[in-house]
Length: 85
Image 1 (cartoon, rainbow, N blue to C red):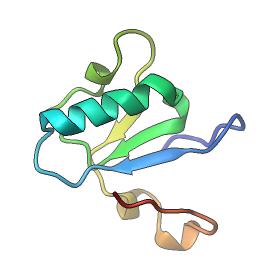
Image 2: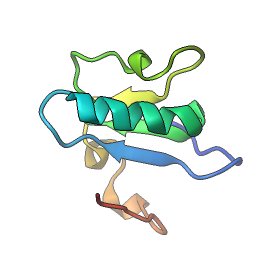
Image 3: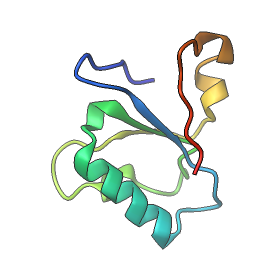
């Protein structure tokens, strides 16, 4: 899992759809355009997709195929804020 940057919050996006549709791809590209790559992590990322497609150049955000609960136990989430859209 990515380490938290002292420059700002760590954004963790849990992908919940099958595959990576065009709308999700556009939303994720938009996020990657203004959130520094060290502060953006995608979980449940589709294994067949390359996360570097979200950036035109430079570093890409981190991506993992596992669910958040598999990477960090819920007991380790004190103070975490969740946004559902």
